[in-house]
Structures are given as structure tokens and as C-alpha cells.
Image 1 (cartoon, rainbow, N blue to C red):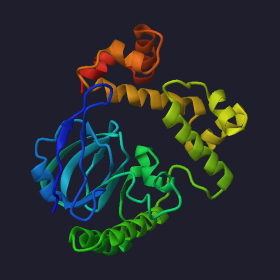
Image 2 (cartoon, rainbow, N blue to C red):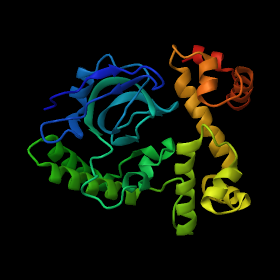
Image 3 (tube, helix red, strand yellow):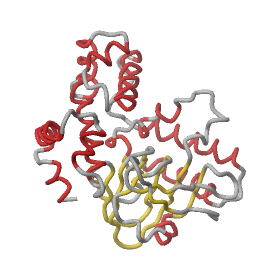
Image 4 (cartoon, rainbow, N blue to C red):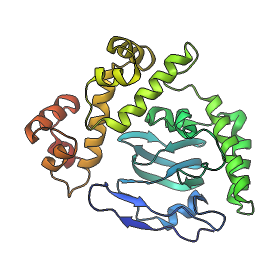
Length: 292
């Protein structure tokens, strides 16, 4: 089914490993495969790695665990997980694994949807790991299986594939209760989504909530109250946690020195980065690396 799926070692400042091709004969932007076959072909992919495409897996049978951005989850039947490009992933599966794997390029929906931010508007592609792993509700399971089985069948054109994924994503998104919702105030929901997007784009160089508040045309107090109400964390904590996450991602790459990571994350010196990391994580960067 898949014409080309290979691993490439990514050097320079791009961490770990990326699976560089997601193509099948229908379109160079998507790959749909049975989980059992996928794992057989990627039997050596048991170390932390990241993807340069969107990725989701539905488990219909099997056990073990998997981690996304250092948060660990036990596998259970009908669990589904979603990953955005750049997230760190590792698995340790047990027994006979059944299910479906879908990898698709960020431009898959480019020519079919007017909204360019469609994927980031979905709760499970928000970048918050807690929203990306959940169990499909029993009432939806047969429909979800049917959609993925038809896609796996590989006899449908790309228009059918994109429309089916669009339907599947909307179905699952409607069933979800994300970490923050638009129920109380859609304006605040939009503000928070924009804040999270700004953090993702600027966390290496912008560390102060007031700088983000200025970009959002609100006061720092408003931004802080918004974050605490909808996510239970202050704006500063959300920025800090994103910096720490990137530090952890880089620390699992043995070729990076702690000094290089500090420089990459725009810290003035190695000692300041070490103090910052230990205060938040509880161990030094070197200790964290030794236990990975």
C-alpha cells in the first residue's frame, strides 16, 4: 500500500528522528495503514522520536504504554491518540496490537478548506497532551471503525479521504470535553487559543506575559485571569512549561550539550538555565538526561 516510508537522521537543530514520507499512491500527503503492519515495518522505532507530520493511532486491541511529550499513557482498546508535528513520542507495546495508523501532511486540507487554522481549532490537535489521548465513546466505535477501514481499503480517491477525515475529526471533536471550552465565553476561548499559538511561535524569545498581552490587546491581569479560569494555570506558568518541554525534548538528544540547549532556548548562560530547569522539574538537566 505504501510506496515510500523511511526514516532520516535529522542533524543540526532539529531533534531526534522524523519519518519523512507519508505518501501512498493516492496522494503524497497521507498514509493509512493497519497498526500491526506498521509496527512490523518499524520494529526498531522504540526510542524517542518525533514526526514532521500529523499522526494519530486508534487501538482496537493490545496493551502496553506510550508517552507523548513525557506524559505516559496505558494502552486500552478503543483508545485513540493524536500528535501534532514536533511532539516527542515513544512506545512499549505488549501482545498482539490491532488498530489503524494515519499520518498526514499539514497541507492535506489546504485545497479543500477555507479555514487555514482548522486543525489547530480541534481540541485534540491543540498541543495540550491531555486533550490528545482519549477513549472513543462506545456509541461511535462502529462508525469510527467503518471510516478507518474504508480509508485503509485504499480504493477511494483523495477527495473521499479528506472528506472522511473531516467528518471523523468533527465527530470526535464534538464528543470531547477539552481542557478549555467555549461554553462560557467564545471571545475568551478565542483569546486563549491565540495566546497558546503565540507561545508556540515565540516561547524562545518572549518569556513575559505582558508581552503576549500586548499582542492580544488585553491587559496582563486579564490574560492571567483568563488562563487561570480556563486552564487552572497562570499565563507565566504556561510560558514556562513550554520552555521546559522544549528543554526536555532537546535533552533526550545525546549530541546536544546542556550549554548548547541553553543557547538554543535563549538563556544568558548555562548556570541560569540549570537553575531554571531544576526549580521547575526538581532535577538538573544532566540528571534528567541520565534517566531517559
